[in-house]
Length: 209
Image (cartoon, rainbow, N blue to C red):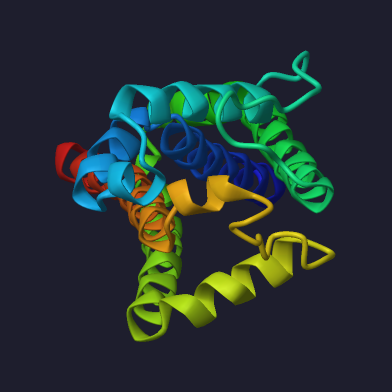
């Protein structure tokens, strides 16, 4: 296997892991259900958990399904700037889905090729390096999550439309910062599990050689 093929394989594999982690986190409805109770969201918005979840599903449907072009939440009106931000988020979500679809099959083929060649040990170094990134980001969040959250938005978005006014975009009250903290933790944990499995498979391949 040439160096170019190895680098290409590792690249699509890591992209697949990142996008899988993001996709699983986005669709972790169970996490938001827990946070409704843990964070007292029912009291913040004065709605029942079922009503909150109904609106949450409407928001997710808009963000994830390309054929839904208008955001209509039953109990949360959205301002013009709020609509712009949600449209930006939708584009990022759809981009993530496209990258996932493009990389998941090549990543699987690369893993199969390594298995057939008994070269899974080649994943160990890449897995070790990749595992450091979430740990560094997690340390930054632990020191100053608000600063990390602001920097995250400045990197991803070209404007300040993400700074919601609760009076104009009351949905922000139902999405506390701590919920997003939990989402980051989940995404990092899923990615760490993924690279951990790659490292374990490489180490086991060496022992069985």
